[in-house]
Length: 334
Image 1 (cartoon, one colour):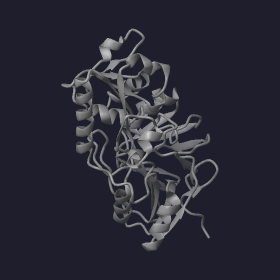
Image 2 (cartoon, rainbow, N blue to C red):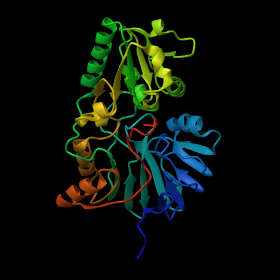
Image 3 (cartoon, rainbow, N blue to C red):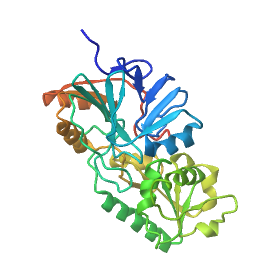
C-alpha cells in the first residue's frame, strides 16, 4: 500500500514523493512555506519556496536565506508532484499549498480566514480530496462580527479616550494584526504611534500595500506627545517599563480570544476587541464543505472537538499533532 501523499513526522508535513516539507518545524533540505509567522517559517532550512509577496517578510525575519518565489496559481513540479500557492487570506503573503500527484489532490491551509480584510489577497476555495485545516477557533462560540463594525468600535474608543485626554494603547501582533488595524484606524482622530517592533515590520509590509503614516515611539518621545493619540504595540509590551511613560493611558487588545468572557480581565486590559486573522466556526465549516474534500485532517487549535463534529457530519476526519501555535498570547508573531 502506498503511503499518503502528505505525512506528518517529527520534522513537519512531508511529501515523500517530492522529498519536500510543508512549513517544517525542524531544519530540512527543502521547505515550502505558507506564510511569515515564526511557527510556520523557521530558520535553518537549506531551500525555501514561498509566494513572492512573502519573500521580504521571511527575509526580514530569518536573514539571508536561499529562497525562491512563485505567483498565485503557478504550478511547479518536483519529481512528478505538482505544487501551487493559493491565497489563504490570513495575513499579507499567506498561502495555501495545493499538492497533486497522479490525480490525487491535497490542500494544506497553513493559517487562513475567509473574511476579506482588504490588505491580504482574499481566501480562495481550492477543490481537493484531502484537506489539512487549522482549528484555532474551532468552537461554535467563535462567531466573528464584521471587520467594519469592529474597526468602528476601535475608532470610537480612541476618540472617547482622546476627549478624556488619555493615550490609547492597542495591542496586536506585529505581523498581520498590527497592519490590519493600522489600515483602518482613522488618522483624523489623531496621530498613530507605533512600538519599534511593529514599526519595523510595517516598514517591510509597506513594500506591498499602502498604509497610513505612523510615528515610532523612541526615547525622545514625550508623554505629552502621546496624549489623545493611539499607540500600536505588541502584546509583550503590556506591563513593561516601555509603557509607563504613556500615563495616563487606556489599554485595548484586538484578538479572537476576546470573544471569551473573562479574557479581557485575564489579560488585564481595559477593552477587548474581537478581531481575528483566523476562521471562526462557520468559516471553517463552510470552507471545508466548499473544497469537496472527503478526508479532513485537523491541526492546531480545538482539533479534537472539531474533528469529532466533522465525523458526525460524515467526513473522514482525524487530528494530527504539529508545532503550529495559531493565535496565542505567548508570542508577538500573529
